[in-house]
Image 1: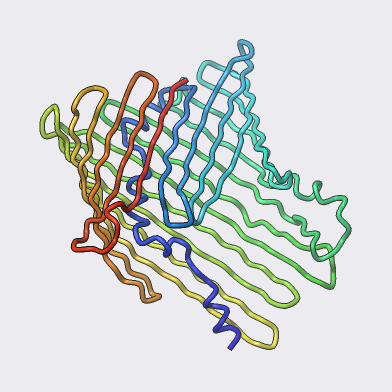
Image 2: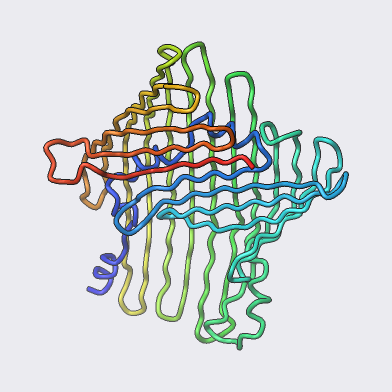
Length: 378
């Protein structure tokens, strides 16, 4: 009975949001926004919006760079992400040596409120700017965990690394006439954590993978594009009372097609698919196994009609449709109508998108979710 009840406490937080994939369509930046942010050494961009009654989606990137001498410089990066399955709050302080005009050697430290989560790294940067470059970093996450716990007495609560996670990161960015390619990847080895109490055992091991691919290419009046986002996570845990295993992977893929009708109008079509699989097992002493297997398939399209009123004001009129299926009995469809306005003025770009209920008649409010984007060049 207990294993059955335990599965009731397992939930996938995205299921609290019946519009999650449609929200993801509004959360990524347009190609022109990507190119503008990549073209500067000093900038800020953010996209924020409603996920559900309890949560906001927040994504922030800040970058700043300064030369301290002819060969020595300092780069700062802030990456903050608040999403259902991922939470990132990294401050990257990265001094570098400019060995050649197109070659830099970086050192990196990432700070956190809890020192045990600090990260060290080193890497190389090949490229003359941030439009076209290759960056490879070797990082050691949580390198300070064992040291930060040195004053804690041995016991079940003192959990230290016996094999640190080691992370390899790669970023490739390329622009050419009418086209763009971006590849970002992260992969860790398998780490091992264990308590210092030989009787009250507490052990953990796991790994993670992440791959992001984004491209577009203009062909006459048409522009074809694609996004592919893959995430994998694994964590196994063992204590005196139980042992558990949590393994999941997720993909979001989005081919897109744009057509320039005339100088004032443009049509964009995004076809988005999301698949997630999550397998969890729990084994409690003298009780047996409790299993939880979760899969979901979500399909969505987004038609965005753009009107270029002027260089400063750009209107967006669109509609979204989502089809949601999972193996927990949730199958439903959603439709939204969208109205958005971009404002571009010198170093400030701002975008407001209001997503409204598109299924009529409805007893719901007309307002559904709101997303905003901001881009600043310092």
